[in-house]
Length: 470
Image (cartoon, rainbow, N blue to C red; front, side, top):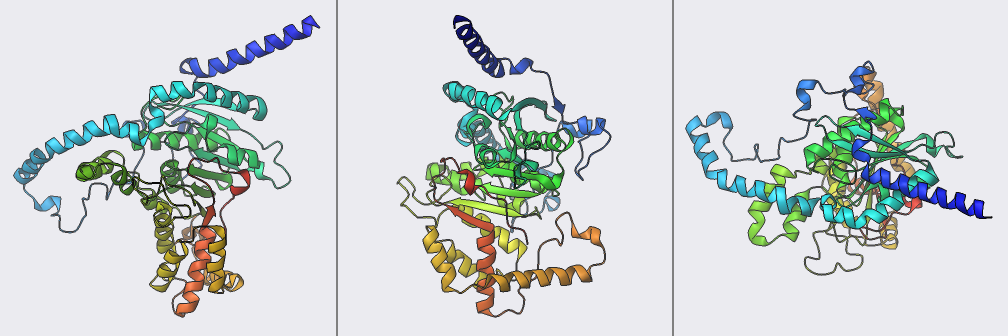
């Protein structure tokens, strides 16, 4: 009996040592995959291949056209101004630029990404160790170190279900999980798809957990780039079987990935916003508004909606009805139960539908979807939907016939893209106001699902679903 106890104690000590090694010795962990291993393997399966060495220093491509208001109406074009005027303007803006830089690299970064603070990591260390131990022991998690093009080391964990995919074959799909601003894969959003039966790849933002660097948008995108390449070229998942799941601020890297790799299979955004500026202005003093807007645009331009509209594949938005974090309502007061009117996910849905179905979302369509978004619970949503007598079969037939007619008229199949007929679709032209309202409500309900939960509540496995496909 003493021998059995000794063996159990030895196993327990080994588990503790293994978990501790995961945390403290990750810096000396060998590199499992680099951003340029795609070229070394003989080319990329994706249309967005590995960066050249010369481009690696600048990082991956980001959307920055409207970041600083360079194309705003009323501002003279740069070519129309003399060099002296440009120099004078730069001198005038220098104090504001310095203040913006100081804010972004101190208080701003801690507010946007509190999980990167050393004290928070130390406080959460026991929970992170427990999460790692559970992933390794129960789900046979495989930890790996990836190196992004900027040199940052990215801490990842992969749970492979392909050998036992389940009766529905969910394990054949890989869900890449993008955590929130205080989330770690050890205790973050990956648990919902993992417990639902999918293969899962989690990773930590730069500066989070075992990942090095700092979580600025460029570094985050660089990290996401190597994670996607790792999934495609080392784990050997086909792009069509890869689902990107972003929770909260993870919606930025999730939409960046699907914008850059449009052949990826699907996108799920949970408790995500359209743009960081309204949320930042909400929590900062009103007198700081100008500085806050400039700082966000220059250093934290998380333009989720703009990136989302550049992905042509299936999308599902999960809106949490008790979410007061991504809501511009309830400033300095608790958010009333069911108050979803200020949820920034509403703007995300409207931007998406207006881009994909502009004819449907004109006038009556936009107005009816805006009213439908005010439904604060599932019962109100269903009642509103039933009041307008939406015929789902008619809507499906209309969309399918439009797609078929466009594909018949377009002989070049390569122009369709990885997900078929590209957006925007002009379906809905010539419909009556009543029919346009019904089609708009049908599309809104297919792209957004309400979840009765707060922002930080763990998502239930049954609430994680793949997006609707026509």
